[in-house]
Image (cartoon, rainbow, N blue to C red):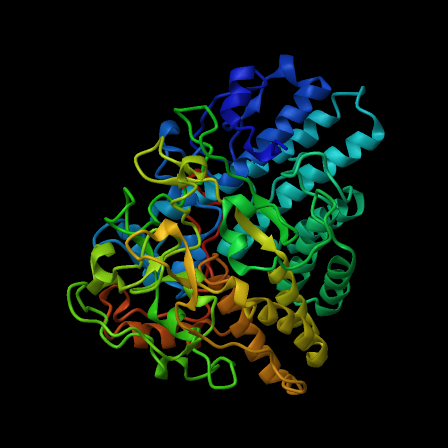
Amino acid sequence: MKSIQRLSVYALIAAGIIQNSCKKAYLDQPALGALSVENVNTPAGVDGLLIGAYSALDGQQGTNVAFGGGGPWETAPDNWIYGSVAGGDAHKGSSGTDQPAINSIATFTVDASNGFLNSKWKANYEGITRANNVLKALAQVPSITDANRTVIAAQARFLRAHYYFDLKKLFNKIPYIDETTVNYVQPNDADIWPKIEADFQYAYANLPGTQAQIGRVNKWAAGAYLAKTYLYEKKYTEADKTFTEVITSGTNPAGVAYGLVDNYEDNFSAATKNSKETVFAIQQAANDGTNTISEANNFDMLNFPYNGPFSCCGFFQPSEDLANSFRTDAAGLPYLDDYNSHPLVTDMNISSTTAFTPDAGNVDPRLDWTVGRRGIPYLDWGNHPGQAWIREQSSAGPYSPKKNVYFQATQGKYADSHSWAPGSANQVNIIRFADVLLMAAEAKAQLGSGDLGLAYVNRVRTRAANTAGFVYTYQDPKAPMAGYTTTPAAKYVISPYPAGYFSSQALALKAIYFERKLELGMEGHRFFDISRWGIAQQALANYFNFDGKTISDVAGAHFTPNKNEYYPIPQPQIDIETIGGVANLKQNPGY
């Protein structure tokens, strides 16, 4: 089944449905993907515009190098830089001097001149512009039936809300434009949560439960995103009601009832994507025949082990703080407060040629699907060798990312090598069902129903305890594709929380917050979570103080409350919207 999202903007340009134009400001019209008047006033033309709005989900259109932008990693929709590196999941990786713009984001020394922020801003407004153009065009095509018109509008409004949600959690103070906007110079002094909420409400009310193409959003994806919006707004009663509807009745676009896949790792493999756990994902494809413009996940192209079997690049290295969080006690529960007192590795700069004793303590099995660590099978590429796959261990630590990496056995199908660094067909999970369960648990706990939230958390932990989903040793480490033994690669010990454990609201929330760190590690959520929870200063201080002792890139880093919860408004955008000496965009506090 072809995914709507992978019908790229380049294909639409070639078909003449949209025209290629590129403007300096993304609040100036027209942007890349501008209307072609002679082709848009047909049902096919409107659907082509909608496909263009989906295509912008990968963040690359308008910021791609081919169109004068920066590298695709700057606008990665998985937010590996802005959500995971900034949140303490990972170090920037590579060497201390490579991509210095990321260093400033990771250490909260970032300012409004950082070009990455401007690229991210533009990428989201590109998507907003495309969604608005769909809504504009709908009014020009009377031959579209009312039913189809409603479904098209609901998809466009879902996509617009998604792009605005991303901007809101990044920058907070953002200008709002919609399909009725005439003056694109707009202030950023109004709270746009109600606008985002209204779009998701419309999509939830009007989208069908199933779609003919798996990449199109459905009713239940809209419901999950609406509930997430309520959670960010701290409207816990509304969030709880909507999450309950999604959990009890929701299906993916193919009509498969939501649930957790049996094996945790299947969420991160192209061979098992679009499963019952997929709520809203950005579709990727490899080896699609374009040869010059890859449809693969190239925004993660830097995030493969350095040296070894991959061509590039050693970025996005999991932190000690994250790795140590997977330690479990004798009862199979996490150390919620003192996990860094139980480290997995004591020598952060040990050489691959130095004798090494693998950790023998209890760990959560999700560790070894999240963190590549020495002596443990790295998918089917062989045991991770440690420093031999690390570019500069002293500045980034000994670990490698894992969730975005393809398997050796299927690389011919799911890896893409049309660019200078690896790409893959792995989808990007914006919302998956485990995420929904944990957000729902959070809403329950906030309403004083922690015991009900416990059941949701334990569904996630019980899946993690499935022995079929453990990492096992190789039959022959020299021939890793030959198969695995029945011997677990580490001492995996994990259990559900016992009944009554969430009777205290404070403890329930602490456990739920920690479970999100474990389940969603390296998936771009962490910074936005700790910021909205109001615990960013404490959480990041723990990370900076522990990792900073031995890993130089975050040594001395500091998070400033009431400032660093959001990124600065990009200075080029303030400059563009300054008319007659009056700045229409106001900078965020503290910058």
